[in-house]
Length: 196
View: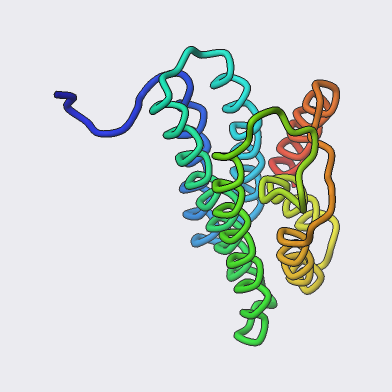
């Protein structure tokens, strides 16, 4: 019998690291360090981008593969829904009237993740496109909005993202070049957030 429940191997360590960054990011939102919170969100996104690549290179049992699907979605809830929610309510212009934007964002994100867990479990082959905006896009969109938009407009970005999470349109999955570009953007974002 194992001492701990769960799976602990290199196929999931990156997922766990992303959750750690997000928990730190939530704390940073609470104490008002929003630039560093956005940096934590970017780093959680980088972890999410690489966890799947690592998992595909590791030999796993069917149970470990199913655990990977579930833990990835649960991590996405923390990384790309809970941390952005903490940032949203930390916004200097947040008031109760804007709460509906956050509700739409979080509920749409949860619906999307649950739906694709069901669909993914029935997939028989590779899929080259996402349907709708992936929740992981929050790792780039929200920090960019934080840097370039005024605080009120950032709140409206959440509403738009929530709608796009559940709209049925195609978004091409990133290839190697786009992944490299995303890492470069992440590094630039982190550097900027530290300097300002």
